[in-house]
Length: 394
Ligand SMILES: Cc1ncc(COP(=O)(O)O)c(C=O)c1O
Image 1 (cartoon, rainbow, N blue to C red):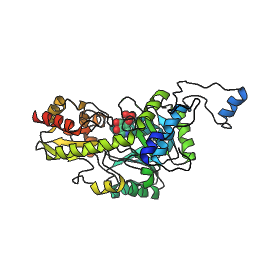
Image 2 (tube, rainbow, N blue to C red; image 1 turned 180 degrees about the horizontal axis):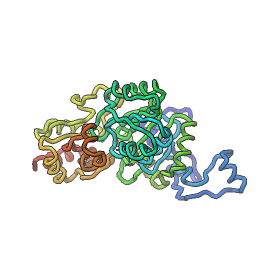
Image 3 (cartoon, rainbow, N blue to C red; image 1 turned 120 degrees about the horizontal axis):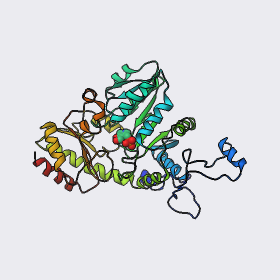
Image 4 (spheres, rainbow, N blue to C red; image 1 turned 90 degrees about the vertical axis):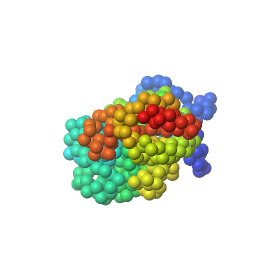
């Protein structure tokens, strides 16, 4: 970004990925084009042969997409990044790049539902077997490793229970068996958690969430640590085709400028909401990484800077009480997804994690009464009043 000039994360959010363009705009232009004309037949063939740098076709690379990728790579402390059409396109690209038929994957039980179902239904069809384990228990992860384990995939905090996996110790277990550690860093974002500093090999995000932060884009990203990994992933992404487009890249890049300040407000609000919920007599339990009652509170302190905007809880009245709450909130929107400026509330067992089935949900600790909140950046008292009034209807 600034050559020979080290800046703080807040400054990096504003400036990362912004390059030099014709007419010197302070924001990267949107190159809304599918293809780029060659200066000559010779230049076209030199570009395809990789003898010359430049743009050929937007599925392969586009300057607006690349500017956003550079920004995320820089914020994560990675080498380069690859923009994908969704978080799930990123997950698919990662497994297609790192595994082949006969390989084995170890994955956290607490992951986004479709990540688990992709492994169970699609990767299994192509001969990649997965063992799901509670990766908060390091001995269980170590026990699940096999000779052919190529990837350990963790999401921390995990969706939707907020279970926290020790990234540094899991990286050691993965590396001992020659496997790569992939971390889904969606819930914390690089503002709060830096998996590369803890030994991860690949980081991914659903950029639909905190990175973009405004609930108006679906996108994903893969961040890698070296050029060879970048070239390998780029080849697979180019062939699978799950790329992000220039306009959505522009929006994500714009969102990233306020990532640091948004995350501060998400955290500030979420701890207040979590404490309010913990004290409410209608609530059975609350899971928030910033509460001392969180089972992995100490692990979290080691690896994230603050506690994020996500909260899970269960009402004493179970799912029936939950539906009353969901149907009576006014400021909190009843919607899936997370990480936007607005507070969202949802019921994982019937929504985001429905596809898993009851048995797998139970294994992952997702009870039928669990409610998930993505705390936005509104006034904290307004969010709490809204929840208090809706809880009063139970
Ligand atoms: C932690 C996590 N990873 C991956 C995904 C998938 O991302 P997308 O919906 O952008 O495909 C989600 C979506 O909710 C998520 O929460």
